[in-house]
Image (cartoon, rainbow over all chains, first blue to last red; front, side):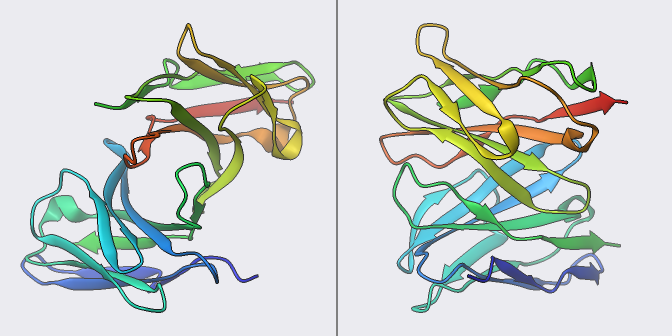
Length: 113
Length: 113
């Protein structure tokens, strides 16, 4: 099976712009979660989608949003980018059960100038 | 609220010696516990999990972890460390009330030849 894929792998944006990141989960996985990873804050949970519904949400401002499509692919959007949004954004997919492990993609490295 | 602590930022061990990476957690309900490893410039890879049953769980690459309910710990262990085990290790927890995953801050393991 193909793993979790994320596009693009690298992005450079300027403050105030918006960005959309894409994630394709492993075939058959219905849950997709997004995380922000930074050296100072570690791995922070953004949100989780399951069957097109947001199941959990982390403590991020409303500038961060996401959605999931009927084929389980997911996108996250960040509007009005700030310098502090520079991070590695990781997507993870799972079958969706509470005890199911997540499988991570390689991440999208976002740099905000 | 859920939380995960990894009390050591860095663990150094000589090749061939046993290694332990510590993790303690706090969660509402019964815990589902996971260990992941991250190599440079890559996403996280699943190592092992505890759902229920045997307190000692075995995972990939010779790693194992022991669940201790009274101490709310889930320490990662390996009997004989390899230089290739050098990486960043994350402990994660999820409660059985449907909460999101919470990751610890990570522990950098260095195995010295």
